[in-house]
Length: 615
Ligand code: SF4
Image (cartoon, rainbow, N blue to C red; front, side):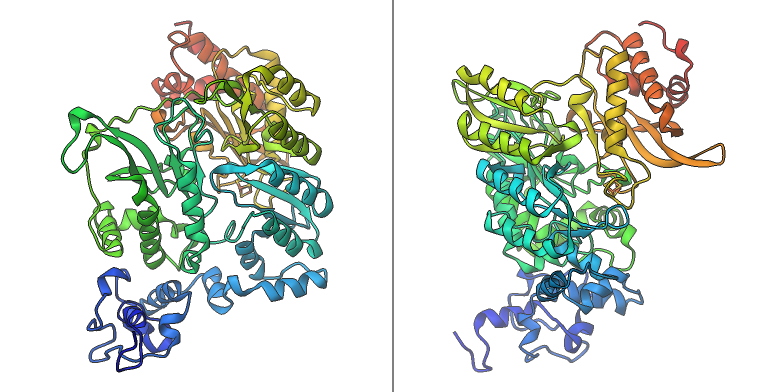
């Protein structure tokens, strides 16, 4: 309907709630958060004294980036200076870069200056000087893809990239060694495969993760893959979801056998149960999601439960409201503080959730966390090997990939196994391995043979099954060490010397960005350069006792600046002390490490072996 001033009702709602551009930017700079739902009335005064926003230019309510630009305006009006990435986004909206990218591809050119950053919004990373090539990061909600998609990706990897695929710690895939003329074609061909990668890098909501066994896990509380998919599409269809001040992670965990590591995310949804004896009229007995906020392990923080309890069908809407608050309130002047954690630190949970409620236009429901059943059926590394599904007669196969890498031939072989023996689906895990689902029990031996025939493994030692490494120096300019290569060498060393009867997670990360999340590993290594006889060599700081889920906690430093040459022996000493000093096999490595003092941990790592006698 069109009113007397020429605006439709919908446009009037925008007029009341949103403002954009120089005409009205001053009007919003001092609003803590722009609230769409709070402004459903044309009488709201947004402007400076007396400046009623009644007839701004049409662009004020149509511009798709209004939320982000208003946030930048407020930062500058408050005396701040936008960081160069914010200025770059303001000068050249990254989602409108496609024509330039096509031209540069035709000319065989890589992007220059801040365009390198803007290309990441389209999933293309120019990773020089580590490699003078593009890396392309995909986007697949919940890490799930079909056999034909995997086959198609292998084909692209052969024709336009390095002939291999890397599984990431967000249950995602990356292609590397892409020439400048091929970058846009990789994006197009992935889109043809139904893999929409917009926003897989840059200041965006990254691949939405879910429990990798969603729908097949006999122990899960609820399927999470449908929610990850819904979230994924909610992001893709809303341009405002590309206006963040920094990257953002969302995960759904169904509390089943394999964790989605949701407590390492900015927003984590964990399936919980309200049991009959805790049920109320507002919270009948059943399955809900508990909302946690602010996980960012590189900054030594895990997501903390808010007490907000959500029905499954509310989660996506609430996540969108939270992201909108973050877009409006996140720091645009300091990249190090431009994460949700810092808004939460500054505001506290109550104020933040209050702003989210304004966005939603309704209160969020709280429930005492101590009255919730939080138990998880988590079994570490349970995804490697063959395990029964909830569907009678069916099993899934967990395939171990050496620190996440498979070549295109192996990817095709996995696709064939999924088609011939499984239900055609493949799930990637945050542990950089993969799962083939829906295998008939009778076919287990044939599947074992097929996995071995392509050079991959359906079993892994208790060291290798939980070995995680980021890209490292062979493909990332930030890396201080060759993390993937070092991880494999470390596993070789340990497997020859130690017989571990329980799984232990070892995470190697190349820099402070902590893509391999070293702070939540049983043993976490972060790369550094170490001076050895006038040379700078690759080395690591060694952390011990991190965990997630039931064992959530940040690791403590046990050794500082260890040259990689002696890292394997250092890790061996820690594991040997554990085997010798634990209270039986029931005591996990993390429990053992946490009962040692900082001094004891450092002594063991340094080689004072007699410190920990047999328990
Ligand atoms: Fe690169 Fe650092 Fe991430 Fe490793 S942790 S992939 S070195 S940014």
